[in-house]
Length: 246
Image (cartoon, rainbow, N blue to C red; front, side, top):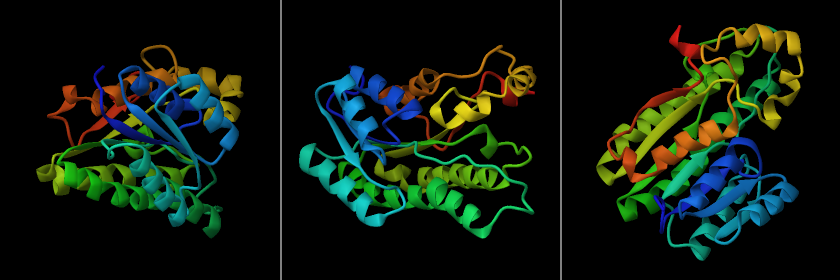
């Protein structure tokens, strides 16, 4: 019960990393708020998890939906102790071919919306003098690969955003950390992972010999959400099977 009496908001909570994190948090005693666009997935997740789960449908890029998320959370639960900024978009295109609208969409979802939600959560955490903000970034915020420049940039910005929160709000008892996953088997990567030849080639870059699963990231989130990590803030933590170690 490491998260007993704590309330956590998890964006993109209906599937993949978000859903696995919701299960992990709930098992440790947290009240969980799931936020996402697809109502059917949120409803299914709520039934799977059980009591003390609130699912709220909304769009990360719409400020009114974020306001609704905060209001509903505070109306139903006592404050906000943990925020997991998990919702994100992965798209690729050569840099010289990507359209302005494609670039803007990736930035809106992967960094601007994170800023908008985080700034709404911070005052509540400041009042409580306590909070843990966890950003689901990527190893592509630490290194760059071709064909996904906009994604690389958005995750690099997210890492620096996390560090900025850590240094600015540490005196308020608020911690902020980034988890940088390698390739994880989720709905977002399903199409990519259908390319078996590519996956076989990529797997050679993972010393541990496999790609990641949502629970691998959920376990890291649980550590950062709990008091066990009370001296950890401003960290960029690769959970990548050793990909960035060489």
